[in-house]
Image (cartoon, rainbow, N blue to C red; front, side):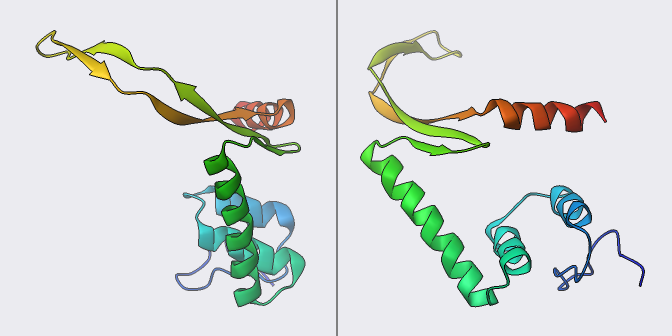
Length: 125
């Protein structure tokens, strides 16, 4: 059985393709919720609906924790945290007029050393 380099439209499942092949195919385009759900379906063996529900519950837990200001750490991947920024003065680049920038909270992601290493190995290849 020959493996396709890309799944046909509507055929996201890769059957018995090796993990590396599936990951390469997923990396060729933007990784979406449906791709993640499909990966859960293939790796864990849950039904499509159960895979989608599991993904949604994980993303919901992460979102709720971050909304509360709780940092989220995912081993071998990285950590997400919320940082409070104070009010400051900015400039309109066109007019040079000073404009106050309101205080806000921003999401910060810090990749783990393992993720950085993986990224650098992929870019060197």
